[in-house]
Image 1 (cartoon, one colour):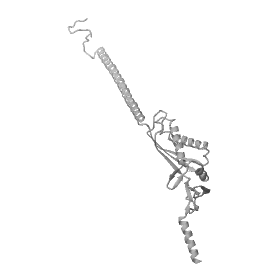
Image 2: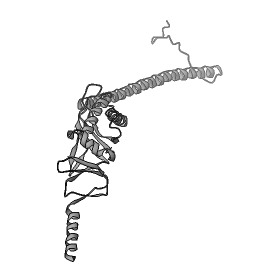
Image 3: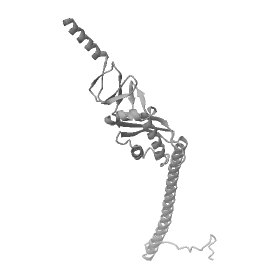
Image 4: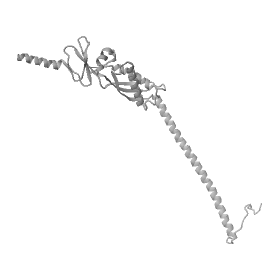
Length: 265
């Protein structure tokens, strides 16, 4: 009897170590039979489930990330962005796992690290389409500055499409993040050249304004100089005439129209 109990315990331990699977946090399991048919309800995180008869498929349900790289959507000025990278994070309602896996096309799913990412490729397509449609509303040089606005539009478009497909209770978009935007190189070069030309024009206009002010300053100084000389001459003449009048100056007054031969005209 003791040997039987010991054998049973060893068999049970072997089954627990090799014939059971634990559903991890953030995942939901689904049991399948030998014919690959789904059996029963979803298996919740923390549960242990035997895999000797049939098997268990696991599906991440939280923080599933999709990365779209090197996209080139068209902008409103009919130029393609040189680069557009975006991350999207979505979640699956745990209660919808079995239904999504059994009723939706398997081509909608993604596979990685032994897990099945439900509706991964489907969401990837929705995000790609929404990105191209949203970016089309902006000019090439506006996209980077309107990043937050575009993120919100993409999220709303994807959510609306999920609602139309009656998947909004099963799938939710938790994050949309544009990681990188690179405008069309030719447009960027043209914009840079335009800014440089505008700066050069401002510099030249400033130089013209300075030259104009300097010319006005010199003219003002010249005018003041002529007035000053005339004033000094008049003052000297007045002083001389007053000196002659008072008998303090012995002088001969020569008419201004007298020539060198002392002939008055």
